[in-house]
Amino acid sequence: MTGSPNFDPNDSLLDWYATNRRDLPWRRDADPYRVVVSEIMLQQTQVDRVVPYYEAFVERFPSFEALAQAQRADVIRIWGGLGYNRRAVHLHELARVVVERHGGELPSDRRQLLALPGIGPYTAGALLSIGFGQDEPALDTNVRRVVARYAFSGAPNPSDLEWAAAYLVPRGRAGDWNQALMDLGSSICASTNPKCLICPLQPGCRSAGVTLRKPTHRPQPSFRESSRYFRGRLLWRLRSLAPGATMSLPEIEVSLAAHGVAEPPAGWRAVGEGLARDGLASITETDAGVRMGLV
Ligand code: SF4
Image (tube, rainbow, N blue to C red):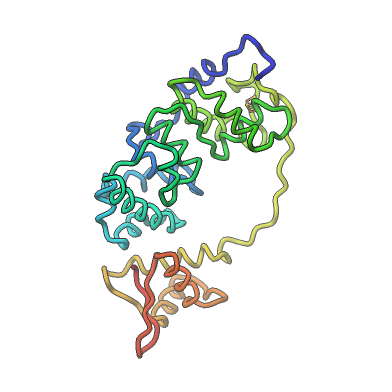
């Protein structure tokens, strides 16, 4: 597959990983429950930010059974400021389905994993390789980039990329291999300015030393204008309520304004309705007006 016949990418990358691997709490125990919690937390969030939330979460909910029995509001509270709180709802739903359908243990079969809520091809690959020791690739964004550069001189089509990723997995070492590719993609084979000179895959890489075009950046709206910001602020306010308590719409407006949070263009009620649709908040209409709380 590569242009250097004497180069073994397995030895090279796994040796590099043995000395450069990041010491992360979910790597100390390849329990499938912990793997899935970490993978869902790592979606859209940096590793360093995830670590303390992960440790608090698995201490409070050490198994699918414990998580399935928890109140939704408690799960959201522990998820805390990690953001993208729908992930907490999905994880909670997953726990309930795993307990109902599989007695609290994740199945070790790709088809059965993909039938579970919130488990896509990447998470299934991570679970099968890291949690169950099966020879499966796990293609997240970083791994896709590394494999595409290593095995192809141009941009591969998706099926060629998936074939190459599966072909490269060393038998019996898939968990370490996939995590090594993740670490390499976040540290050395970054999206811009890859450090090919110090890369363990460099001798066999088809893109080594090629000047890689920087992606063009589209202007983004400021974070404080985004719906994610307003959703996060409202949820933060609701999380501070006692269990079962609610706040009226005017109380929410005044309280958030006192913390320097401007009114969202569509109003706090619309933000609350969005949270309620995602199972994160409750809205009740009373004679005195709208009230919101956690679910
Ligand atoms: S040699 Fe360069 S392009 Fe190839 S995998 Fe390593 S860092 Fe990426």
